[in-house]
Image 1 (cartoon, helix red, strand yellow):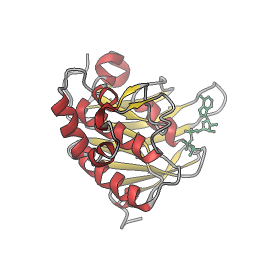
Image 2: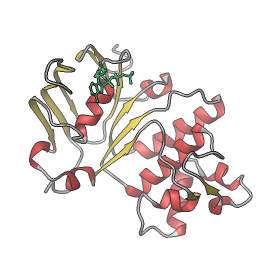
Image 3: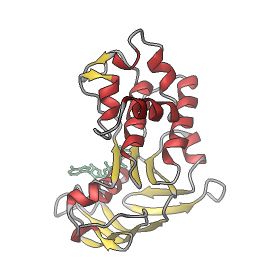
Length: 230
Ligand code: ATP
């Protein structure tokens, strides 16, 4: 069991291969302090998704250690590990049901008022209220009635309700209008407050607002620092 965490994440010389032959991460080391915002950037195929997959232990590493609050994640139960993490992949997961239920999925005990409060914090409330049925609007798995930005705002509200110490986000690459981008940036700022976060960042605004940028190339960290330093 991983006890209640603060969100310190450490990679110690992590080596990893999906298949035996080709090392994908060739010795990756970094520390993310509790509450720190980390942006992961680098060319396609460099290992960004692999790093975030390893934090939530979707795969076991070949060498090195990954520690959370000093606990080796290979030694704790997956349930206790993932129960303290929020994971938001690019294609924000929407199921068929109301927007209310989609957000409540982050915490099934949440009241309607708590769902609405979470949506307000991450700036999702206004677009939801622009639908005739508001929070009772029914959406489907493909999120047909929702834009990419709106889907992401719903996933932000859901993540806020779940209230994890560590958040992992693969930022959507799809083009969104600049108004939605501002909204997403504001929503994200609220969501990430007080959490350790790892964002595969595609927008310059996200990168600028990070505390630490990890630039990865060919499975190795090439540079690490703040936006001003790099
Ligand atoms: P992108 O920006 O394109 O999403 P990325 O930096 O996230 O790229 P990864 O997805 O981490 O890159 O992939 C790193 C390398 O690992 C690539 O060469 C990729 O082909 C390989 N790879 C990724 N997933 C698997 C898998 N499940 N099995 C085998 N190889 C994989």
